Image (tube, rainbow, N blue to C red; front, side):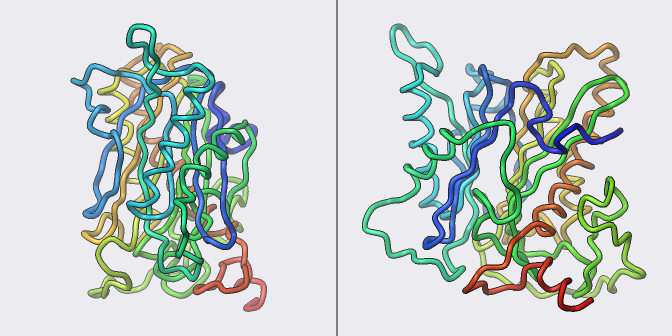
Length: 332
């Protein structure tokens, strides 16, 4: 496998990602959309998820495709970002046809960033406007680190952020990941700079430090956050033609990447989930081998994207946690 030309989820032709954020709010929204509706699924492993319209992503539901997927800050208050995206899609004539009407299908998920020092005493809900702005900004290139849904994210040790990565399989199928990292756990070995995802790093994409000389003892860690205050939200995608059931299996496999890159992950206090998206522009020549490799690539891309999110997070005034890059620059 090798990364795609951008090393972003948008290396999958037809996919676009947009970010919007409010610096005073210290929160934001990320939207993944496409030129046409795409197959989508979801798998939840965290104990405190916050979601909208995820029930319809089950393989036995009537609607098999969606118009966009939304990742947002704001905890349950941020679910209204999906309404802004829906409004923007409807204005563009997108949506599931019901007679003369069109209903955009926009599942979403949220992370908790209400205690990160931002101004949360708004008089009017800011998230619908952020959602619509993120949709309007959607393109092939987009910012990582302190951007979009990862703008105000934190982890157990470092400032969190937004990450992405991609891989091209020997078959030519492309797989990508997009993630907002706001985990209870940490992405490095103890307090050191070595990323847990280092064994899967490509071309020094998060510093090239290699694996830690030694991992910290397993021990019995204590939670640094409370119920509902942590979540890692991810989307894994491919250009392969997948059924909704196959897409769900890709999401299940991708959770391995989260576990490789965040310690601990999938706790009762996190709302960890993975959406899957498949544009269906490339047929699988060998469904057994291709399906096997797609799941592995999804996990690997997600681990890399998680490390990139923290590696690229930018320091800002008022941060409650150190940005990895700033700490590394001063610590040598």
